[in-house]
Image (cartoon, rainbow, N blue to C red; front, top):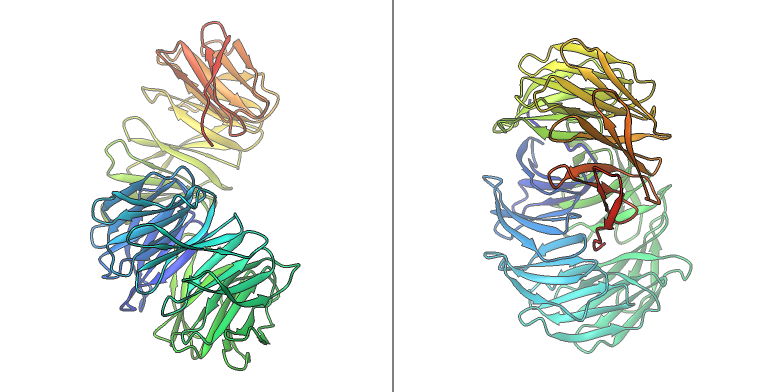
Length: 552
């Protein structure tokens, strides 16, 4: 069995130029390439440290480009899945990244503005300084000569792609602009705004040509031209996309039928049909001329985020149910299901020799994978509720896991056989850590305690009681004579490992403390809260030393 199927929401799906492959991007930190005919997983791309927001093929199909919440974009070799170029320079999440039509440059859109990069070297070619505010989208014209951006400063902007020089600013919206696209010859730009309107502009002069009043009470998230540029479809916050005449702005027809918010709208390549994807778990196909509803594509179990035509006869959809699906656009038949995992994957870790990877999932199972072949080696079944974390011992011989079933377990890493159960927590167990020699584990729980156990016997050695809310983490110092714990009670605590006695109470955070770590030769402790700056404490006296200021 292949390591196939995303383990979190699938945010996008895109088809290669030849229509033979599909690339998907997911919140599980990965991108994947699939055979568009069979649904077979062809390649797996994992190196990002956070959600992958988009993944696209290069014009020649030899590389893919990913954009991530980890503030980086990456260019990957399709055949080897190696990272070829890493684009580092944004200070915020990257919402999208696209290739220029000739594949020589890359355009990234981030909350800190857009940037243009060289695809071969990763060198920053142009920092489009006019857009220092958050950019919602950025796109090349079809001929690659212009770039358009949509910003929260109520404007869209058109740049020269070669020099990065601002050509014109599209000023006229009274609120943030969500999206901008060019028409086929690049002479027109189409915007969608938070002010309830969509506008068609002269991309050279910045003059408003057509003002489409969609709904002053509704945000317009996106607007697209039909392939012949004669129609526009707008997508607002709500259930009903609208078709408009691109020359006059006349309201032509409403696409009524979805029961929940519509997430994407796309024309077929011949412009005769429209596909809409919705939170109601359905993709609908419409006649683009009459607005008549033609068929429903039913099969997803959660929101459908996007739907795209390819070959005019097929559609690929991406969903929050962790899958992408390929459909026959004429009959509505499901052709391929790009899936695999049954639920959320909570953790993944490499073995000490990096030849295996272990994953823990909400589906109550643990899986061990061969890193090279991406095949499942073992499936560990025994927990009665979701598995929050699974880790290898320092020598890789056993595995420790913790679960919402209030237990921890030790497993043989070679056979998958369960060896020891650790029973004693009265609530969900959320973390586990081996001692350096692998003979003891420490667990933390929502029952407000941390516990130290003997790995071989399962015997409880020490119970660390004193927190007044969930304990999030525990870590040994290098001598393993002390541990530090962090908690939702806004404190961290230092304990004596042998006696379980509290040594120091580190009080000073305004919010929950998510992690606490020994550092500087065990003389200091860093406490980390997602709500404020980290703090440094004296590990020997418990005294506060300083805040560690960070940029958000």
